[in-house]
Length: 392
Image (spheres, rainbow, N blue to C red):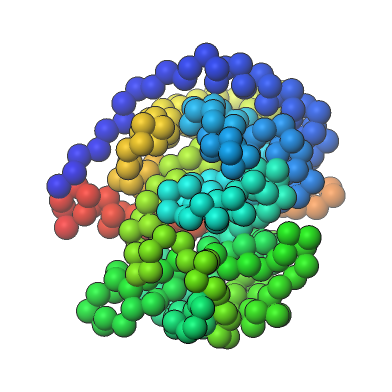
């Protein structure tokens, strides 16, 4: 049985200095985005903005310099992310690569893989997607059925991945496939692969490699998610991440990066900002009380999330704490549209005649339903927490 802890953390002076630098960058490169565009948070994608972030040194901040990184602390990276998310900056293109794929390769990848796949990420020129979830599997990663069969010089991979964010624009997928055949060891025999979807010059490699990407559109008609099909796509041995059949333990360590960051409680922050703007001109006691409670909850989640960042900075494995932050953060984010609708006499709607408040509310009413699915469903997370605490 484990116990969890969220120790108080004070950010170092370097983080405060960086905050001013990031705000100056955003004032120059993000000032013209509308509130509705900003509401997309970290799903908003703009490759040119990612390249500008790379030039400014805001991608791969904690990575070694020999791979294009900047060897700054996790706290400095955390501050940069906070500022980008609160500003609604379009960081989605490079998000996955910076958050989890890069750290995965730093820990488990070969030197050849690091030299090839990390420097372009730090320049904001290479984007990644994650191939984990599959049809009829939900968030049960141990039920992966897509196979990788060993052949001379590599593997032939066959199967389908679903809900794959950014697969239509990504250069690389890190995919999880079944390489073993033990029916009693669902968590055994899984392997991760680097799968090239585009060449560095942008040339599409999917058709050449027997890979198809089909869009899955959201309620808003947006194209973030995809279904990806592999029909005996060849992946060379050099593209195996870590060890063959060791994918499960690698994925579990990777998910700690995915579940604990500020994106897990700031995805709906634009609506909170619009509520504050509305109350500044039309104050009500009910509105002040509601926003006060939201800010209190936000502050608590931030302290918990920063504590997890401190554990990551110290080289610890905060998988349990990260799951708690992700679960509580999704609940918080999904409550905000309902609270806004309750305290303001407006309806959520999107269109040129709608106010900023109505448009942001309309976007999040439809979009926030997905927040308890991405990064692990609520049921899966609570099962992880229960097992970690010895309750099941």
